[in-house]
Image 1 (spheres, rainbow, N blue to C red):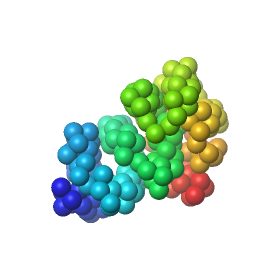
Image 2: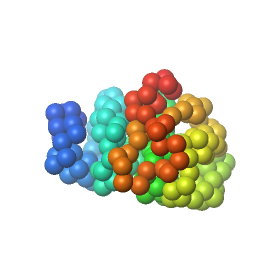
Image 3: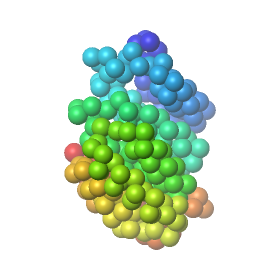
Image 4: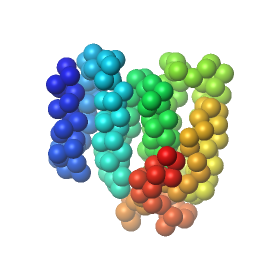
Amino acid sequence: VHRVGNEIVCLFQMRSKNRRMIPPLLTCTHMLISKKYLDPMLKSAEGQDYVSKLLSCLEKEATGCTDASTLLRIVSTTMDLVGYMQPVTEARVWRFVLSLLAHPYPRIRRQVADDLYVCLLEGSQLDEKAQQSAADFLLEVQWADDSWSVDDLSDLVSKLAMRLGIDTFEKTRLLRQATPGSNPVRKKVDEFQTYASLVNSTT
């Protein structure tokens, strides 16, 4: 199992941004984690180091990605990691999840909101009050509304972070602007920068 897990990370690193390799690799990784096949590694002494390495791969693939199908796969795999995060990786995992929730594509935001809602209902490491408050907020917001501006999304995600009791997310510019014609946020699309800038601003 450890060998398989390490090979997955190596493939991500060797084939980064490869449009033929990355989507099926993301699907495979999601299935292995969601079906608990990688549990021996994820729950081992090296588990958090592996979560960190895999998260780095997902962050890299998300940066500048304009393919909705690939982004949805990234969302699924990222949400899988929420159940395995520990204090050493918790802040970073949450930052990435919240950043995806503020993505310029409405479809991506809706999927992240749906997956996060289910994750909160199934239980997380947060206290019960924070879970319920965050779940209620996720239902209140129309995440698929394509009229949200960058500032609107930043405010919404910051409010959610407060309900989750997370103080690692700062209001900042979000993911890189999508390509023309791919239905990005309508307002202030020129203000989007790379995901790397968001991570650097919150570390």
